[in-house]
Image 1 (spheres, helix red, strand yellow):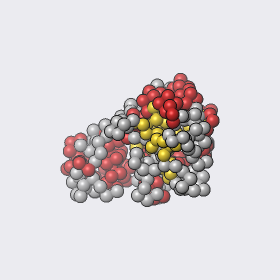
Image 2 (cartoon, rainbow, N blue to C red):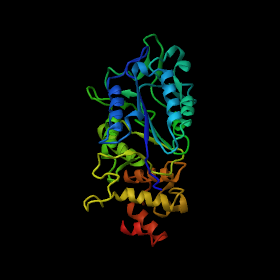
Image 3 (cartoon, rainbow, N blue to C red):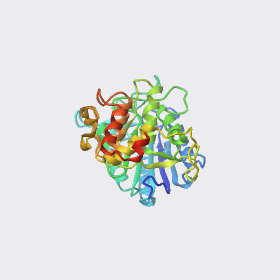
Image 4 (cartoon, rainbow, N blue to C red):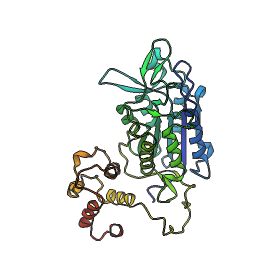
Length: 363
């Protein structure tokens, strides 16, 4: 069986710009949801069945409606489905310093009773855990900023105010579980840019391009989770240099699963024709797949990273081997991971361990 198999996709997309009692956000937030929904359900791009793509916007995105939408998604999704949950709007940081957490702010949230009128990260994590799909990807585009008209905090005009955003702890909760992953528009201490007059936020602008085929650099016919984040992580900082860095969280994710079909690519997933000679696979992606197969516990496996000249202390810890390799190679491409390690040294070390491996021989 193809580990990236993609029989059916389902999505719940939530966007709130015009809050009832809290500072508003630009119209780009609503465009984000509508455009992601159109892209996912387009036969020319991701080819989700339109009936499987549900949107909740502004007045329809109440606390009760969001929780009901998640319950309905859990009731309909089967293990072989791929599920996406997308939220664009306010997040609020609550709790005391050192013990901070986050809540998802719905259209009817009230800052005077924030605990009972928002959705806590624990509550959201429980709702996501009920979804039995083996592949689930959560997108969070929050902590918006981009001009004097957009507040950097949540206010209600009555002296109630909360810091906007999501904590690392909240992101970790939402990504917990096998086959679960999360992509967020920015780090906990950054802001998600929305350029004045732009149709979409910066994060969603890049996400849309990725879903429409830009993330399928190998023309595989699928938009795969690691490839999608690779594209987002490389392109967002080009638009907002040094100020916005999307993050990826995965607790137990080994397979580079398909988020969607890539009908906008140059090759249909059902086409048996070989790739043109000019359309070669990205060697970094090929090496990542090989290393994840040969060293399933990550760069620490058999001291692979160290033997190739790398410094393990420069790498972030990930609980799954594939996620660890994905992050390590992205760090290496950006010039990190140790002074004496590079693509060639990694390849050379792998060839020393597996001299007869056919794919290694072609790199």
